[in-house]
Length: 253
Image (cartoon, rainbow, N blue to C red; front, side, top):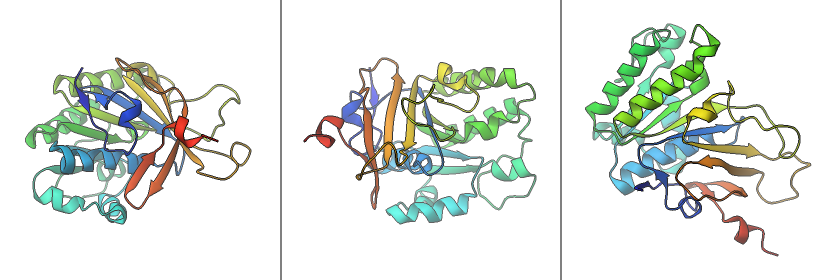
């Protein structure tokens, strides 16, 4: 099984070296858990450290703000775009019905899901992308006329990405929740986790769940073809990006 290094410090050791090549990963979490940083670190490190071009499809955030935010970690996205190794594809303007000044955008109506998927695939093929992020899946899913068709949307998108051997992250949103208190929610619509090859939940611990230390954690619910950690993994957002710790080391007395 070929592995794709995640670029997230400390994570690959917990998942047999990285994500399985050509698979889809559902990355879910509440507000402030680090979803966008994790996704962009995966793309940025993929280009800089492993020579794998990447595409970031933004449906929720303005690309110029994302570029500014990532400079905080020393990640110059504009430079990678100028080198033809990276693209931010603007779907936000299409979603809200406003013109975009971005170099790469989809003018297709976002309700035309098939054309949106084909547009994303074309953007990825033009730079020979190996990695792709859709941020976020709920923002795309709400434009499916029939909610019961969300599963079909995720299946179709996953199939097309796998066909081109892209290793992809689908970002999703879940409400604040506590481990061990009621059933856990892993996606917005409740079907995405069954279609994705891997499910990673980012969590922000409440005051009743932690005493000191980091409040952010990472939990791997599933990862096909992988023997992975089943622990709640401490996660830190540092000046260099996201870092996770081996639970056995982090919680040593």
